[in-house]
Image (cartoon, rainbow, N blue to C red; front, side):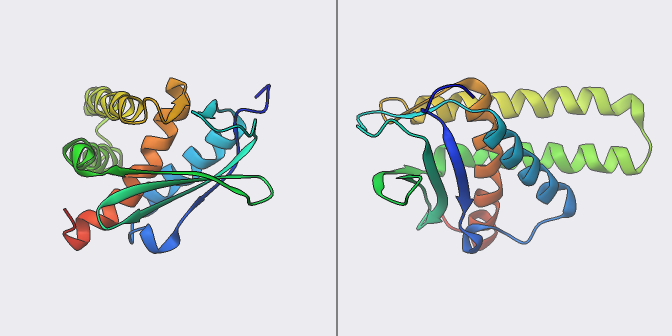
Amino acid sequence: MSGARHLASIQIDEASLAARGSEIDHERKVAMHDLLADNAFNPVGVEHGGPYALSLLERDGRLVFEIRSEDGEGLAAHHLSMSPFRRLIKDYFMLCETYYDAIRAAMPEKLETIDMARRAVHNEGTELLIKRLEGKIELDFETARRLFTLICSISLRAANRGDQ
């Protein structure tokens, strides 16, 4: 990524992550790798020009974006309710499970249809994230898409605990 307004590191609070299947863990790792390889991340109103370090965590049903400079200086923190994301995340994981089941059952004729539905839900979640971060953090679509994948892994734990 050219320019300084990007993420140089990202950390997900391990306590915020759920026990998950290997497929979900793999998606999270790929999203983190791809996110760090190419992203556009600009915290609105932050004088520091980047690059940034981001910590994602879940606290009391809220998604927390802690933004720091690379040397650890706290720059901003944004708290978003996870409630607006719950239905999309639930649908996304259901479609992921169906997709992985179809792979294991060697049903290639169903894979394309399931994958299209999964991508549509993922895109809807990405657009919601961009909207919810409006005025707080400017992101491009691909950065938001990868962040939504990470948010899903956090939300899965909160859903398993029954947080609202």
